[in-house]
Amino acid sequence: MIYNYYVIHYTVIPSHPIAMNMLNMNETHISWIMVGWMCIICGTIALYTKPSPFYTWGPNDDLVVLSITINTPTRYFSIIIYSFANNFVRNFNSNLLRPWIVHNVQDNTKEGIMRKQKINIRTVYFINTVSTVYIWFDFLIYIHLLLAQFDLFIIEAVSDIFIANFITHFWYLSNIDTPNTQNVYMEIPNME
Image 1 (cartoon, rainbow, N blue to C red):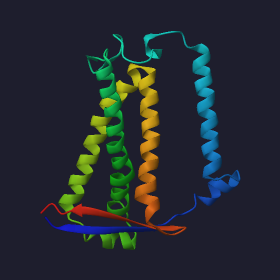
Image 2: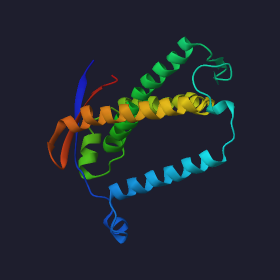
Image 3: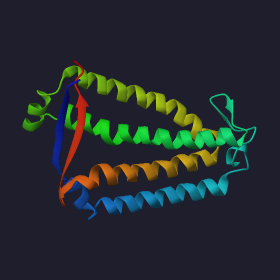
């Protein structure tokens, strides 16, 4: 199998200056606005929610995921392990494969067109197909977990935060050359 090493070299570009400067805001300000919005939503839900099986914790007979009753500690622990493992895969897809598609396939700049000429077309279709099918596969299971019981929502959120930061730290931030530039090396096998 032949391996090609593609380097994605880009400079961190500030957000659109007109939109951000109209309100004198940056990404940190917007993040705090989002935190405030989530707090308002959570407070409203807490005020108006009635007791239901959704707000129970741990394994019980009312916890059903994809027609599987999660009523033993072993099954519940299996769901937790699945959540962490699947969050790794989900984050690899959203933080590595999808950006590779954007920066190597959908980039129509002069440099992007030169990069595209070096990529095997089968590799592009393979990566795009796997990524897209995974998104739908993951969505089916993900929505069942999130809507089954509130503690599974908490487990999914915490594991997603942990793994997204892990990947950001070890994949992106460990390769920084200068404060504003980074190289991302991806080993993509040719499909020949």
